[in-house]
Image (cartoon, rainbow over all chains, first blue to last red; front, side):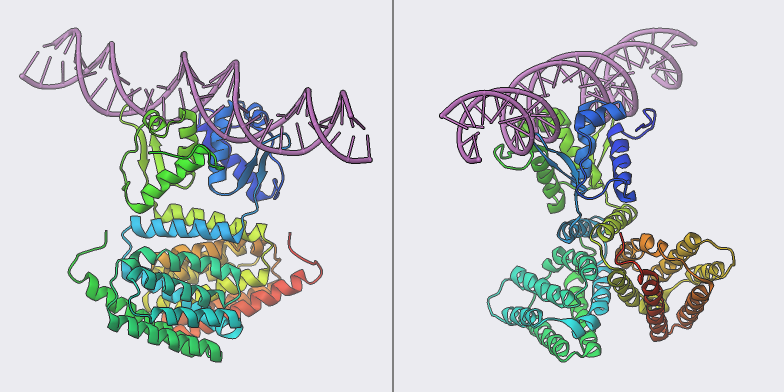
Length: 243
Length: 243
DNA sequence: AGGTTTTTAAATGTCAGACAAATAAAAAGA
DNA sequence: TCTTTTTATTTGTCTGACATTTAAAAACCT
């Protein structure tokens, strides 16, 4: 193992890249143990703190996990869907907030992706997922619900809708699109009239999903998109742009 | 700033989380300078190496950048679309390879998402993107092209198709789905007959995009999905599962 | 006074050595 | 044979130091 000490990049970054490449290429497989920090320091001809910084970089991406003790060390981590969700949501959220992505753009992307799932969901959703959609829709109809709780329930509804497609890769991709919009959605205040419209459309969509009618569900989503964008438009009419 | 020294988590992980939360919540804004490592060490009552490990974790997620010198330090990074693409592709690739996601599942997700873009693309694609699609299709028709080059050109074709939707959020989401499948696609050998079928469908799709005919393009994608899955099926028929 | 060079200070990058804590295997003992 | 103790290994953390980079401040010269 050799790295270039004259590279502009940090040594720890180079070491991290070297190990990461080994994982991606399959040279290091899941649950395989990496050499100890002292051995890595020897192999790369650097000090142990430098190796540790490299390992922390990999740990931040959930590529490795570490264990203390006699048989401890750093192990190649299986990147679970759950961890990938979390990373995806964090990245997407920051991407939206830091790049001043317009509400319309984010909204368009989100509903386009959801429409991609809805046909599969109409065919495959479990009774349980359908029940969740009904429950959340019912919750959204409760008076006195805060805007934040309304949003959270909305996310749960759409999450069930997406999970109904029974494709974990789709669920993973959509997690970012749907949940990353939560901060944007939370900036909106939902008057009773808008809530009623949203709940009505949720009911339309749920009915369509139950009936296995993909096109109807897709139309419902399109209507929901229009409703949401109109609501946001009237909201941001005064202000020039979101922060 | 205080952290719990008795927590099961590493101190560096706690510190990283604390700073990450500050960035996500907006307490730290883009290009703002963090306190120096020595100051952070004081604030959190830990040593400088521990702080450094925390900062490296954040650097691994592109949340901060560091600069040496008198006015140097750690700065909150703007998460560009470009960097987010790269992370998204890395994560998606690992997710697919480490979880033994079946080719069918990944393929279904990818084409479902692409169909979500194609209607927007039919309405908005630039002449340039259309030209790219034609160029890549032409390239795919060249005899003597290696399987890898064929795959790479295929990715370029679909990338142009997706970018045609003119929605950076969609492009970002799709980057993971399309490019992460490259290793899987590369495992396939493409006989001349299959290549011809794929090229023909690419032409159908490009024509539909040019004509602004979203439904036709969507149908073309569906046919392409069937073709791809059938090809993979005949490929993996002997072997039980992909590695 | 103005411009150039040198010095200085601050910050990150790296290293060496040490100790603490956790953990499992090996050794000792009942 | 089972339990307890010891031991070795490995990560987690700390202290202190030096190297390197960089920009600002100081000194210098014209």
